[in-house]
Length: 173
Image (cartoon, rainbow, N blue to C red; front, side):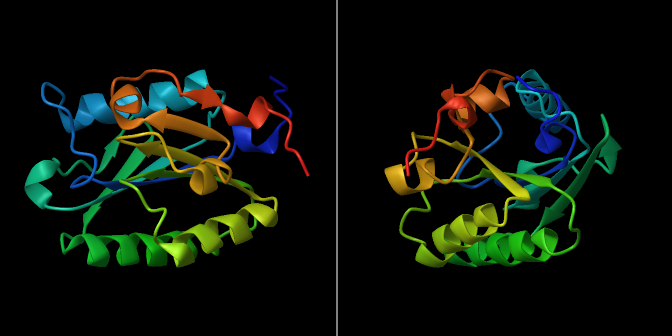
């Protein structure tokens, strides 16, 4: 792992749909955030972490700052409304800086959300965005190809390792 990779020190924006990926029983929000930060650090991502939770407020505790992590609870809504809100927030966050950024998406299957997939591929092509993914099940191939690191949600929530570190696999063109 080359520590000169700009993404290792970049900030990580985390978007969590707690309806698709609920906080596992036995974990509180504080433990969950510690586990996510640990998983990221174990993969070499040491920058500041900002987490946005989407879904019912009773699924998360409101914490303003913990372990160098900012937390925002927002937007319950339907699945379509939450995904649209995450999509809009992702675009907004992507444009707030020209520095390299890691973006960790934690939600259910979005393979049918073509605009979301197109956005991920477009932002990734700009070479200042590194996409990470956690889902309850292994991602579709199209989404899998767009991310550098992929976790099963249960593993990330427990502080575990990714399915595999895709960024170390040479890309075929």
